[in-house]
Amino acid sequence: MKKNIFLLLTIFGIFIIAYGENNIKNIFLNYEDAYKYYVSNLNSVYEIKNENNIL
Image (cartoon, rainbow, N blue to C red; front, side, top):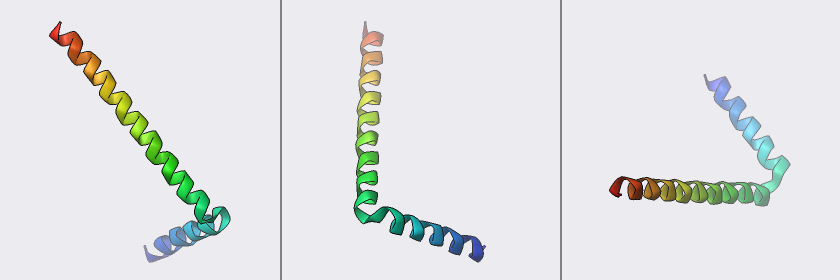
């Protein structure tokens, strides 16, 4: 088990070195934006369904 964790940490370390800090921050920011977009879409779909139920 410890070997697996060490391997994961090593791979993640290589990933950080390869892509650099700024790129990783940008990736996470993009994920955050995508998540907000997805949530706003879900909310609008939900509101449309509710309006149809009221009618």
